[in-house]
Each structure stands twice: as structure tokens, then as C-alpha cells.
Amino acid sequence: MSGARAAAPRTDPAEVERLTRRGLRLAQLTVAYNVVEGVVAIIAGVLAGLVSVIGFGIDSGIESIAAVLVGLRLAARLRHGEADERKERLTLRLVAITFFLLAGYVTVEGIRSLVAGETPERSPLAVGLLVASLVVMPLLAEAKRRVGVALADPLILADAAETRICVLLSVSTLTGLVVFALTGAGWVDAVAGFVIAAFAVHEGREAWEGKLAHDHDHDDHDHDDHDHRKAAIDG
Image (cartoon, rainbow, N blue to C red; front, side, top):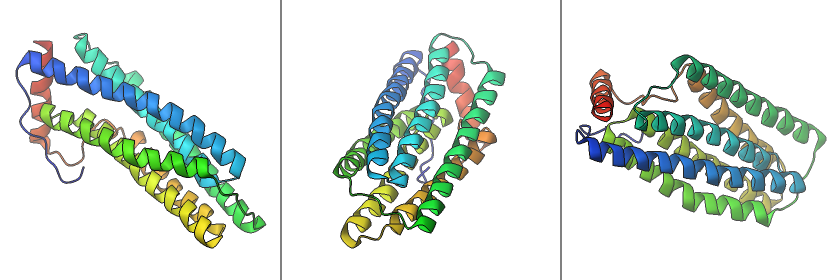
């Protein structure tokens, strides 16, 4: 979580509600952007035969699912209700399976392209999309982080971490495309795909263990602060 620790939670109910609504809007914006990003990436990847770009697009869909989960929980808090923890755990495990499927897909396709000696085409559309993501996603991640710190909210902070992972994937994929464009080394795309697979396995393990909704860098005191913040909303 970039080493930042959550500050003391806001106790003013009106301010807590305002920040929670901002967190909800950011989650909704994440879903909207990632859906468009994912569709464009998959189209560009299929047209150019770029495994890493297809994997990036699928990952955008997975990021959207995580943001939907966050949005549903924040909406439930604003309605003074509680999310169904059993259904949420089930959903997280379904997300985990999707991560593992993503990892398997890009790994198999990467190996196949290496063995077959396939050479992908250059894709200005994919490069433009990745550059746009490198501009938009860091801003979105930082906005989420600020809301999460202000509320001492591990759920929003975890969502910010998900968005930062999307930034890392953008860097990895774009690096592979640039190196390929400069050198013509087709194997670079497959290697970039393997990097995405590693990220997907990591995220999948965290989803399976139910850690997507928790901030690993917070101690028990921070979780107590989170409980106080929830009480402020309910009050």
C-alpha cells in the first residue's frame, strides 16, 4: 500500500457520508473506464495477435468486478445496511477463479506463440490505449487512496491497490509492445504475457483468501478504527 498508513477515521457522520459517496463514485468510474478499456484492448489484441494486450483487456474486466464489489459494499453502508458476507466470500472466490483462468490463458497462449514462432503485428491502437491508462489510472488510484486514508477504510485502500496493479500491468504490457516495435522481437509479447499471469496468480490468491477487502499494511488498531468509522455511518 505504498507504505502509507491510514489516519484516524473521520467521526463527523456528514463528512463520513460525503467521503463514502466519493468512494462509491470512484468505484463506479473505475467500472466504466475498465469496461471501455477492456473492450478496446481485446479488440486491438485480437486484430494484432498480441497475447499480452488480450490479457490486459481481460484483466480490465476482472478489475471491474472488484470495483463492483467495493461499490456494492459502499452503497450498502450508505443505506445503513450490511452486505451479505457469505455471498461476498463466494463472489470473491469466483473472482479468484477468473484470475487463475486469466493466468492460464496468457501462459498457454504465450508458450504456444513461442513454440510456433508467431510474430504479432504492431498496434498503434494498443499503444494509445496503454498510454491513456498510464495517465488515467494513477490519478484514479491516488484519489481512492486519499479517500481510504481519510476514512481509515481498508476496503477503499484495497480498491486503490487494485487500480495501482492495473497501472503496473499497463507499464509491463506497454514495455513489451515498445521493445517489440523497436527490435521486432516477437517473444517479448509472450514474456509480457507471463508477467501478467504472475500478477493474476497473486491477485487470485488474495481474492481466494478474502484479502481483496483488507489492507495488509494495517494492524489490529487500524481495523478497530474501521469499526469506529462504520459505527459513525450507522449512527
